Image 1 (tube, helix red, strand yellow):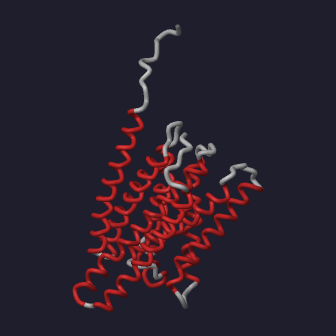
Image 2 (cartoon, one colour):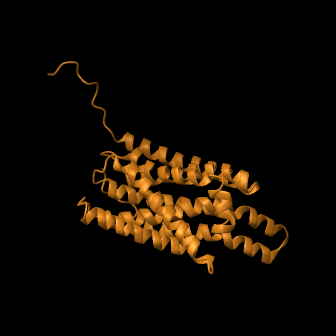
Image 3 (cartoon, helix red, strand yellow):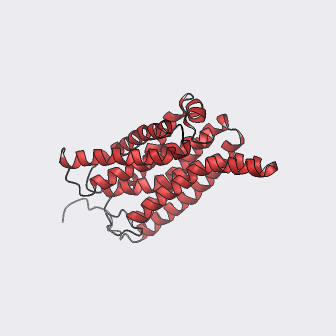
Length: 276
């Protein structure tokens, strides 16, 4: 496994948090802006706004997948899928708490959810490190990051289906009551855990993993677009089409990295039938 990191963890953390929150908040801000402007522009802004939730979630997926990489490279093995599931478990609890508890100030919901998830992740990471004695130096930080990324993934993709992050007004009837949250949970978890699971090995590279994370995030966006077709109509179509385009772009980049890395491998010939 390569220890060379093209992008520092702190930069990816900022990318995930800032990109995720911007995307999530645009689902709420753009319709408000549209109402101020009025006319055809209002209709356009209302239609495209949910798509930004999914774009923000992709930012969080890329950040979270790299955090999974950093903690899993210590040899967790089958713990890689478990990391993805626990991330979404912490994320959904934090998201529901954060969005539901700030009824007087709903705009603060995503930030409260992010902070709550970080606290939960820190506690679980501390417990794993100091009580279970897993002896992984980056355990506490990575579990904190993974939980935080999970909360943004949950809120971002849910907003792309519901139209915004209003917990009682839209998320409950359009995401929870319809069962879409099940897809958000499972597919979002796979988006986080699959990149390292697919790329791990002695020649694993961060750049290749990040492109694959973008690809898995885009696939999840496609699924959310299909769900949004039933809840939002035209907005779902935009999310679906853009998700397909992003998947093609990210997967092509990933495939190019695979070819570049494979080209440096020297063939050793066939395995001899008998030992020399």
